[in-house]
Length: 138
Image (tube, rainbow, N blue to C red; front, side):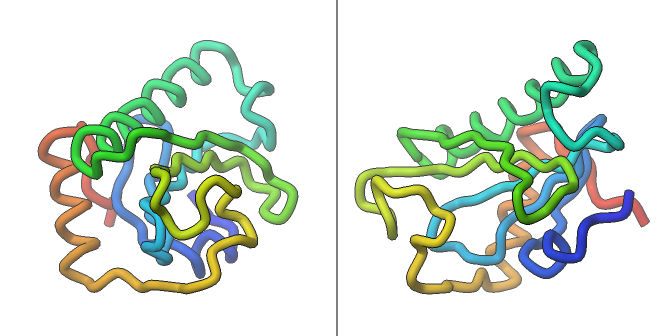
C-alpha cells in the first residue's frame, strides 16, 4: 500500500493487521495510533460493511492496548481526512493530565516529543505479542 506523504512523514510504521497498516504518530505527547485500511474509499462509512467490521475490530485491538498497557482511561477515535485524503483512522489515548486535555490533539499539542527507537520497538513488540499485529511486510 502506498501511504500519503504526510502519514509517512508524521509516523512510525509498526505493522499490519488483516486490512489496516498500523502507524504510531511520532509525537509521543499522547499515545496516538493511525490505522490505514487498504481501500480506495476515502470515507470510513463508504467501505463495504464486512470490511468495515474488520477495520473496527482492528481499531478495537489498538484501543485495548491503549487502555490495558498505556492505562489511558479515554480513547478518541476519529476519521477526518480534511488534510490527508487517504482514509486513515486516529485512535488516541487520552487522560486528564495529557498535554492538551480536554482539547482535541490537532493544533493543540504545543510540544513535540519524539520517541526513542527503543520505545517504538517496545510498543511494536507488545502489539505483535499480545494484540495480533503482524510485523512489517518486506
